Figure 1 (cartoon, helix red, strand yellow):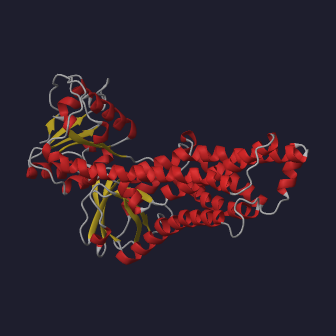
Figure 2 (cartoon, one colour):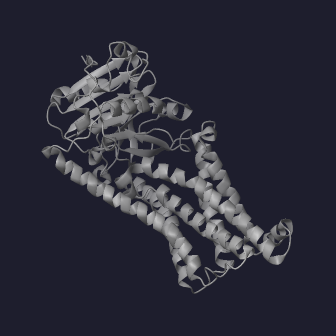
Length: 475
C-alpha cells in the first residue's frame, strides 16, 4: 500500500545552501545549459538592436524637423516590430537545440510575451508613417491614408497587419478559453501568411533595404532563417520521421473509467532519442481524429519498437482515442520538453503528481538514476478512481527503495491546499512530505492551479527557484 502523507514537522526557514559534493556534476551541467540559453536570449535582443542599425547605416537619417522625426520613428518601429515577429517564429518553430536548452513551454512563453510588443510596434509603424508623411506633404491624415493605399504592395502590408492583429487577439487568455484548440491553431497558422505578405512592401518601399545593399541581404537572411526553421522543424522533419518510423496503434488498454493507454508500435524508435517525461504532438489517421493534433506525454519509457501514451477523456477529441483500432497510422512531431533528468541539479528528487499529470512522471521515473531512498513521490487524487498508473509507480519505488505517499480526497484549505483536506487538517505540508527539499529537485505535473499551490508551498519550505521543474498541459 502507498503510505499516507507524513505527519508535519516544524517549518524551517527558506534557505540557500552550497551544493553537496555529489550534486556538483549536475550543477555544472545545468550551469552550462543556462549559459548557452542566456547567450541565445542576448542574440535575440541583439537582432532587435541590429534592426535599428539598419536604419542608422542606410544614409536616410534626417531628424531636422517634426515630420522627419515622426517618420523616422515609424520606420524604426516597423523594423524592430518585424524583427520581433521573426524571433517569435523561430521560438515557435520547435528547433531541437532551443527545446533542449529551455524547453518547449519556456520557448512558447517567450513567444507569447513578444506578441503584444511586436503588434504595438507594427501599429505604431503604420500610424506614425501616415502622420509623418501627411506632415511632410501638407495633407490631412485621411488623404495620406488613401494615397498609401494606392501605393504598390501596400494592400498586402495592411492585410498582413490585420492577420497579425487576429493572431494576437486570439492569444488573449479570455479569448483562448472560449476557442477550441483547432480554431486557435488555425488562426495562428495565419501568422506565417502575415509575415509572407509583408515582405514585398518592405523591399519596394523606402531606401533602407535597397536592392544590392547589405541591409537587404541581412533582412532577407533573417526571413530565410525564420521561415526556413518553421518549414524544416515544424513541418518537414515531423513528416519525415513519421514516414521513417512507421508508427501505428498496437492496442488500447483501459486504465480507468475515462482513461486509456494507447500502445504504439514502430521501427527504430530509439533514433528519436526520446526520454521519459517528454511529449509528442500525435495525429491519429482515422476519419474522426485526423484533424486533431494531441500534445500527449509518454507514460512509459520508449523502447526500440514501442511507445505508450495514457489519455484521459477531457473532450471529444481525446475521448475518440479510446476507439482507435489496431493498425491505425500515427504521425507525430517531437519529442519535446525538458521534464527529464537533463535539468536536475541534485541527487535527491521530489515528485508531486495529480490526475493525468501522473503520465509523464511515470515515464520520467522509469529510468531515473538515483540511489535508494533519494526519491520521494506524492500522488494526489480526488478519489481512489483517480489512481491510474499508481500501481506501476508503487512497483518501481518498491524495486528501487524509494518512498511513495498518497493524498486522496477533496482538496484542503490554506497554503497546503494542494493536499487532501484530511492531510491539511493534520498540518501536513510540502516540508513534511519531502525531506531536505532545499537540497532536492522538485518535479511537478498536474492541473495548473494545483501546481501553483504546490510551487508556493515548496518555496516556503526552502526550495530554490532553479530546482523547480514543471510540465504544463495548457496551450
